[in-house]
Image (cartoon, rainbow over all chains, first blue to last red; front, side, top):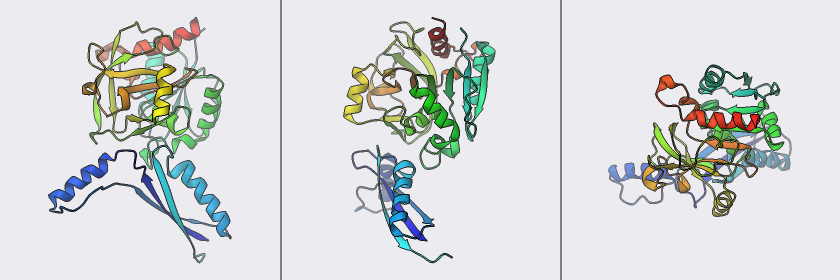
Length: 85
Length: 232
């Protein structure tokens, strides 16, 4: 069994109005040094297979077909072997 | 020949009944609801993917609906040249399914926008627009939070040169300008078709402006165009 942690990020070429709006909150909070805020997604799940290779295949298919839209997003992930429990 | 319509119902669709009502009661056509778990299109000749919030808009609008069993049949039908109209969330689903190019981002205002807009029709020689006269500006409502159309430069060039941009947000007199753009959509794009012209996705809701009781009927021009394309 493997534990996958995925981060989906909006491509740099695509504006992130949500990040810009949140950053305005930082300014109101008195934080003057916060720059380039961008909002992404963090997704974690288990993959019930025996080899890392199989886990990788499943994660990549899940990410590229559903979790991220390749037109506007990039993804990265980590895989860690865990106990069945 | 009277075409038979099918309106797909996803969990979270909320404009499915509006579309059904318009086709059945205003136009007096055969129309069936198609449940997303089925794969039979029930001999429909025109498929409507209605507006709403399929699967609660989780992850990205339309991203989960795109994998519903009915969508395999819709994709197959569309690829064989079948007529498919995606409205609002339906447009988002068509993009996620890869039947149309590009994506719809969050409105640049970050606000959900619900109001009447004016649309300039750019191509009147199509299945969806043949009943619209040149320079006719349509008044149709929008209601969305993610309607900000985006695609890369290459795709936009292709859409323009193939006349696949059917509708752009404009002023009442048909002036296409950023001032009249409700969501930040690139080139004021409100609706695009595929290269063959049998699949249209649009953010405005034609089904919400067909019944004269509601005070505006420009949506009928789009449904009339579809019907005409079957009759002629």
